[in-house]
Image (cartoon, rainbow, N blue to C red):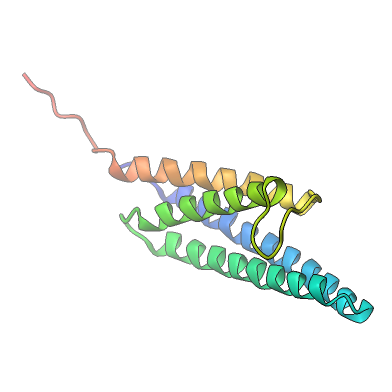
Length: 145
């Protein structure tokens, strides 16, 4: 087994940053929901509240995954979960910008934090893949004579 610690620490750091980005997005959505409520636009306000809850949940999940990655020794499960959740969030994002998703519909705005989170999630997927490869690869190839 190769030394996986630098990759695990890097992945955990990336996951924490992703969690922070999602919390920043949640805060923005919360502020928007308050504005919509003041304006009396109930449908938009409830949509923004749903988005706030979704983004807070995504942030918390990324914080938890960072902890699991740091605690895992030889288990690939935290890496699989990190890659799978990051990929799932990217797919949901693409769907929300193209075909629409329930409750939210089609969003047309592509923000700076959106792009930052997707790039970081792509990096998390790559680092997870490298970690899984390192954990599954035998330490030495046995020669067959």
